[in-house]
Image 1 (cartoon, helix red, strand yellow):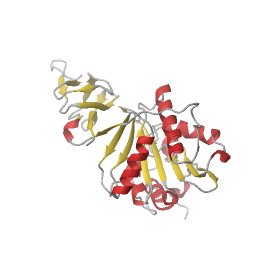
Image 2 (cartoon, one colour):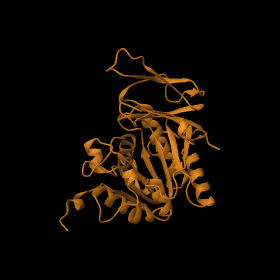
Image 3 (cartoon, helix red, strand yellow):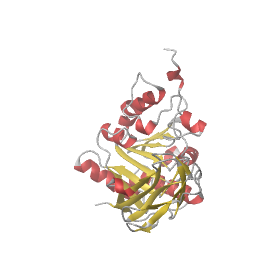
Image 4 (tube, helix red, strand yellow):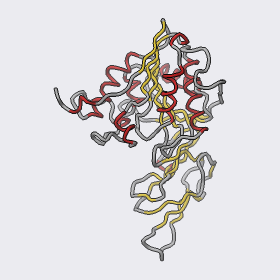
Length: 307
C-alpha cells in the first residue's frame, strides 16, 4: 500500500536488561507540549542500559508530525491524538497511530506515563493525572503510582472506560496509565523541567526499574493533594469573541463569587467589560494564555478536592 498514511515515522528507543517491570514513557502526544519531549530526549542519552532491571520504551515524540510542526494536532489530518483512541488501522494517520499504540505497543508493558502540559493556549497547575478506570485493584495501584510521582497536586479525571484518551487506552490494554500536566504556553521553564524530570525519576524508582535518579542529581518528592473536576460550574467559557483579562493566577485558592477576570469587546468601546466570577470555591487549575478568545474557548478552570 503506497498510501501516505504509511509514511508517518515516530522515534522509539528501547532499553532492556533482565527481568523486571516494563515501562513505556511517552511525550509529544500533543505537539506543542515540550517538557516531556525534552526530558525523554535527555533520558535516552543519560540512561545506561546496565542501570535498569526490566524493559523501558521511550517515545519522545509520539505524535511526531505535530511536534515538528509545533502544533497541538497533526498537520497530516488535523487529528488530536489524545482524542483518537482506540483508533483505526485503516483510518487517517492519527487514527492509525492511535490503533498501533493501543493494540500493539501498550499491551507489551505494565505501566504507561504520558507527559503533557497546557500547550500553546493554556497555563496549567503542575499536576500528576490519572483517570478512574478499571477494577478496584487496578485503580488502587494507579493511585499508588500517581502518589509515587511526588508532585504537590494530583488530578483524578472521570472520563469513562470508552474515553478516547491515552489513559483509557492504557486501561483497555491492561496497562496502568499515568499522565501529568507540567507547564503551558508551548514553552518550558526551569521549574517545569524540574517537575517533569523528578516525576520520571520517581516513577522509574517506584516501579523498580532503576535504583536512583537518572535525570536529577537528587530525589525530590512531595505529598500529593488530590483534585477533581465534578461540575460545569468549575469552568468559565467564552460565549462570544472577545479579549480575556484574568484576575487570578494558577494555583490561587478562591471562593465562589470571587472575580475570575474581565471580558472585553474591543469593537464596542462604549460597552463596559463583562465581569466574570467563579462558580465554585477551589484552586485555579488552568487558565487561558491568549487574551483574544472565541466562543467556546475555556478561559479558566477551578479544581475542588477529590473525594
